[in-house]
Length: 299
Image 1 (cartoon, rainbow, N blue to C red):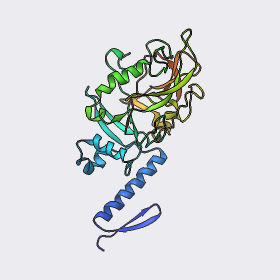
Image 2: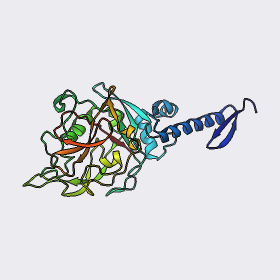
Image 3: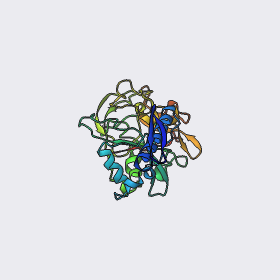
Image 4: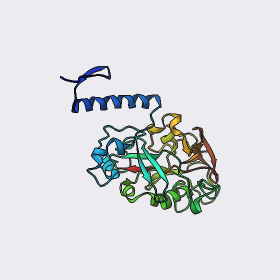
């Protein structure tokens, strides 16, 4: 055997020569390193487009390839934080990272299949009529975190969600939009025709639409400042948010605050958000210094 290489992978010594065996061992070593970095919180992801270029050429584009992998439940070689670049039709460049693998598979009022939530690595600046203080957005245009008579789910009735589904979704390239699937959740209701409510009044199954903001549990692993019980939904914490470092998102070089979809459980006007240093906090729904973090599912 010529040009023999020795590797230690998971405590086992591998002796490999040139060719496929060497490539497999190198890939195994690479994954071992990435897993160690993921465990210690140092992993920031790699481009799926670069890692799987030889596979992607067999498809029309990278999103068709990714959807095919997701639908097959084939996540081999991928880790949370790995990403796909996206250029919005506005020209703004984003990196969308894998947030988790199949977090809600089998759940829901209709059993869910394979899926991957995609999370932007940075907050998204807002422009046009929804923008406040330059490029931020209000959760609601009035200091009220309640639903309405026609839409009792506060988040689905919010100014933030209106921007996500009515504006941001259309900024995504068509090759991305055609791969997005809706996610149904057991969302809290909060509405009374006579007075504003400071906690949830019920809950029911509803679609988040094709673009949405994360919940407290998806980010922090617990309900944080939401209504106890009602803000639990079917949620689980996403892998990319398990470390505080992963919750910190930036606008350029600066750390930035961003909205969650959950109203405060002790106020009729405040909404949960992630502070720029990663802590859980609530602010008025009309705060004008907070960014959106628009996410979507591929499935």
